[in-house]
Every structure is written in structure tokens, then in C-alpha cells.
Amino acid sequence: MNPLDQLTLDQLRARRSIKWSLYEPDVLPMWVAEMDVLLADPIREALEGALAIGDTGYPGSWPLVDEFVAFADRRWGWAVDPKLVAPAAGVIPAYVDAFIEDTEPGDEIVITSPVYPPFTTYLRQAGRVVREAPLTADLRLDVAALEEALEAATAPAEGSTTRRRAGLLLCNPHNPGGAVHTRQELEAVAAIANRLDVTVVSDEIHAPIVYSGAEFTPYLSVDGGERGIAIQSASKAFNLAAMPAAQMIAGTERRAWLAQYRKGAHGHATHLGTIAGTVAYRDGESWLDALLQGLEANRDTLHAFVSDQLPGVTVSRNEGTFLAWLDFRGTAAAGARDLGEEPSKLLLEEGRVALNPGTHFGLGGAGHARLNFAAPPAVLDEGLSRIASVVTG
Image (cartoon, rainbow, N blue to C red; front, side, top):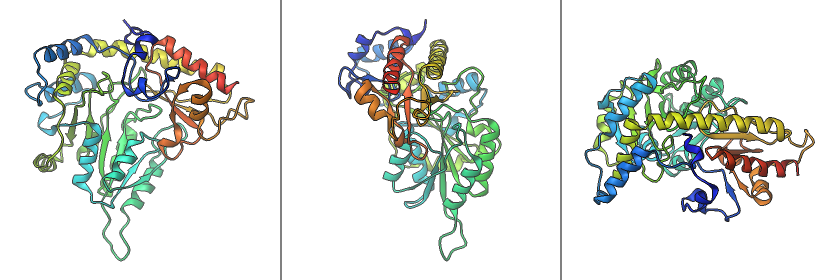
């Protein structure tokens, strides 16, 4: 059964999560990365069991790390040493903590734009300077641009010959657009980072959401990735944002670093998030496989609709994630309506459909919007029709 085809629009509108409560009731929300699904039965049953006995304290004996390690081996053939995995409060706290350990306020962190907006906001809040290395036009890593940005980020300060410390925050699979970085791409990144002594942190929260024809490659598994840090979580693939839990995985050359990290004061995963993540990794793969089929069908529906019904608009051909990147810059040349630098504004005002504003994603965002296609097929169809009503208006 397709997990995306179990809830009606009326049932979804009863939700009080931010996706369904931020806008007026007539707005169709297709923005934030929440999926319109029920929990996988094993996860729901485990959580209901915990709530029934008031098991809502601090994290305890649920074997999240061990089940993640087993999942990584089954899913990707990635042999992870459990001693190199540390539970974390969530993906964002984990990557901020990693850079706090390895860099100082004022140091630069390179990101590959357009990219998930909290990469910028949280790093700046931590006192780091963000430098953007734009992706290619087809939303893949631009190794030359990345090397140029990392060279600049590590360039010696005036009067010094010592290179500065810097970091690189990767997003794999990439959000937005869903590019799944290849082993060759990641090895090129690792070679540059290691030459410049740059700390690479790979946000791999979307790793389980990869479609046919693509293959997820963990950064720590590539040649040169041994000095990196990866962040994983079950939260995106199993829709568990309300119950945070993540895993920080250190590369094999970072054992001493991880031991030092463990001595620090860091937030911890929630108990319910630990339960949910453990069960997701252990018992959720059949549900995940059904979800991927539904998501891939939705992706294909989106691609066909844009090609046939939205003149001048192009859309990412997602290899992974459920977060598509729509480019509206060609509409006027195609005889359709010019939606300007922030298409999401008119789509919300006139079409009553909410997408993420492209400019929030950094360089390359103007004229774009991000669309979440993890919705029931009927809801996706309605949202696309609303977009068409504005574009072809």
C-alpha cells in the first residue's frame, strides 16, 4: 500500500503541525519538509506502548546506534564501527556542534548554494562566516567553484603564512533538487578538503530517500573521507520531525576527535525520538520501500505536468529527497506570465498554494521555488493545478 495515499485533504487539515497551521485554511501547503503520511505501523505501535506506560523520560536503553549500524550495512553496504557513532539531539545541533569543535568564531564555513536555509542561519548564529560555492546549473557539485571557495576560506590572514581553519557543510542528497552525489564527486571534494585541512561535515538526513537509477554514497566511505564527519537521522525518511534524534558518525581517522567531543556538553536525542528511530531502522524498511515507490511516482507526475502544463518552467529531476526545485525564470519568454524573482509570492497570493521562496536558499535562488511532493496524489494534482492557474493565468 502506498503510504502517500492513506489520508484525505480534510484529515490533513486537522493537523496542527506547522505545515498545516501556518497559512489560512484555503491555502494548500507544499513547502516545509513534512510528508503527508501516517506513521509506519511498527513505529506507531512502539510509541503508543511507551505512552501507555508513561515512558516519557530521558533516553535509556533503546539500541538506536546498533540499529542504525545494521540499517547502513543492509541499505548501503556501509560498514560503520558503532564506536564511531554518537547520538545527537538532531541534525542541525550536530553539525553546529561539529564546527564549534573544529573552528573558531569568525572562521568560514563553505556551503553549496542553493541549499537548505538553516545551513546559513544556524552557522551565522554560531559566529561562523558563511561562504557560498554555487552548484552547477543542473544542481550538481561544481568542484572548481568549491575549490575556489575553499582556497579563499583558508587563505592566510594578512601578514601570516598559515592557512586559516575552515569547514565545508555538504548536503547529500542535496536539498533542494535531490542530486545524489556520486563517489567520484565526493572523492574530488575529499581531496581538496584534505589538501587544505578543511573539516567536512556531511548532512545525510535524506540518505534513505533515493530513487531507482541513483545510489547513495556515504561521504565517510569514499577515499579521503576518513577525516570527515557525517550526520544521519531517521527523521526525514520516516516523518519523525516531532521526535528529534540523530547520529553523528566520525571518520576512521577521527577517533581521538570523537573522544574529545564526547567530553563536551551537548544536547541529547529525545527518548521518543530514540524509540522511533530504533524501530524505524529495525522494522521500517518494507514501509520505506513502499514510500519510495509512491514518491517516485509523484516525482514523475510532477515532471510530466511541468513539461506539459507550465510553459517556460523547468523542474529538477530528483534522484533523491521529495523536495523539487522549480525554475520560473523562462515563463515570460514562453508566452506565460512573468512571476518575478520570488514566484512563491504570487503563487500564494493568487493560487493559494504555499511553496518555499527560492531566495531563502542563497545564490541561485531568485526566480525559483521549492515544492514538497510528498503528498497524496490527489493533493499533488490540486497543487499543480493551482500553480498552472497562476503561470498561465
